[in-house]
Amino acid sequence: MTQNQAMTPFLQPHQLTYIKKQLHYLVGAFYFSGDYRVLDASRQNSVEKILAAVPDATPEQRALLAEAAHVRDKEEEMRYVLKLEPLVIPFPEITAAEIKKLFPKVKKLVLPPLEGLDRTKLTYLGWRDIATSSLYLVCRVNGKWKGIECRYVSGQKNRSYICTWCGRALPGDEVALVTSQIKMRNIPDGYKTAGNHLCLDSFSCNSALKTTDGIDAFLALLK
Ligand SMILES: [Zn+2]
Image (cartoon, rainbow, N blue to C red):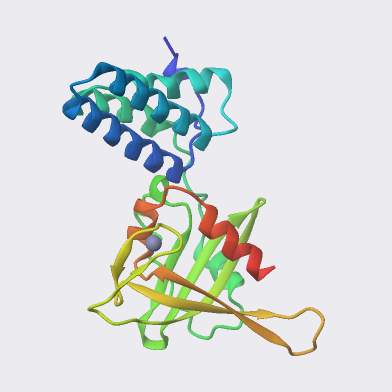
């Protein structure tokens, strides 16, 4: 058995969300499958996916992740998730002063609610200023804070758009076209614009985030 108490946190919030999705499949497969061979295959498949989603796991951590294969019902799912939750690395603490430093050009910067923030559910920090249609994004990149100032244009309420970060399809007033200006290195005063469809409710987006691929791609564009 894994000595859970002795284990230091190693899971990113989005990795736990991904694991939860796989557990959900597993419990569903166990419930609906009459064929045990199908069940074994889907179990193996889910465990492989979980291990692939946490590529830096140590052998001890991998053993704990492989225990997902034994989850058969909602109760076992809950117990296993409770075991994993303390192993999530929370989003680093950030102060209002540090946030202001990230957006030096913004006058009267609206700050996110920093009190009582559940940082174990955050892969990035994002918040809106409705008055200026701005979305502010803060990520931790290679041990440094990165702030991205964006503008957004809401889409049509009766159409759905896919958030490129969390992958959910939501109405146009929840997922909007979000753009950020990038200073061109080679051209003085030159700018280009990077655009993305993103959730306007960043807390909800974080709770659905299963990979950082979309965030990484956006950050790469801004370089
Ligand atoms: Zn999203």
